Length: 220
Image (cartoon, rainbow, N blue to C red; front, side, top):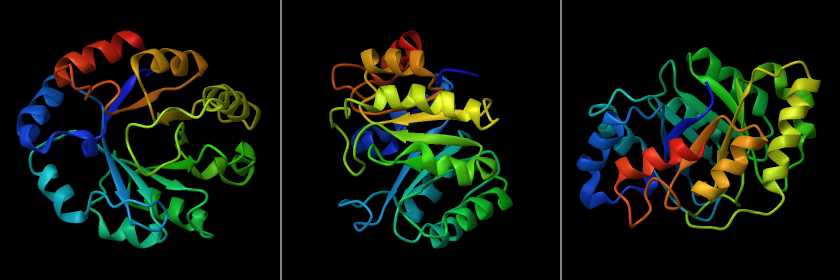
């Protein structure tokens, strides 16, 4: 199904966490986007194993793990990854990307390949048979609130065409970075299926989370 929403847990106001989670449950968002950052692969730190375990106890929404780490194979073992989750690993993050993708699949989760804005689509040639989808970063990863890198929306369309050429047109494309309402429409038109929602849409300061989800669904 096109138009799936994955609100970014990193962007939730911690003082309104329970209220926000209840709204996301009520609005039936498809995933919760879990950014995992180690301070090395990207210059920031984010969600660890303990907070993820606590969130699991409060929701049935599947997780969408985004591993921005130097040791993703270890992280696949450290985190509570369950069947139905998405787990994205960066092509740039490990020389053993195929091993990581295979381990994610062994856990019953959906392996996605993540690409930074400057990473060419040619890596799909060697990985396309091992993935359930592609995560295209439309900003350089590490921090929320950035502007989209200009060429990345065209990259979504090129990725859609490349997946078709490689015989995997059914694979989903996820987009992450400055998924504003205006950009989301362009991303959807370019072929995106899953939208990571942060401070420029679902968690915009002038909206409630429920309002943000409704507006994003309308945009896509």
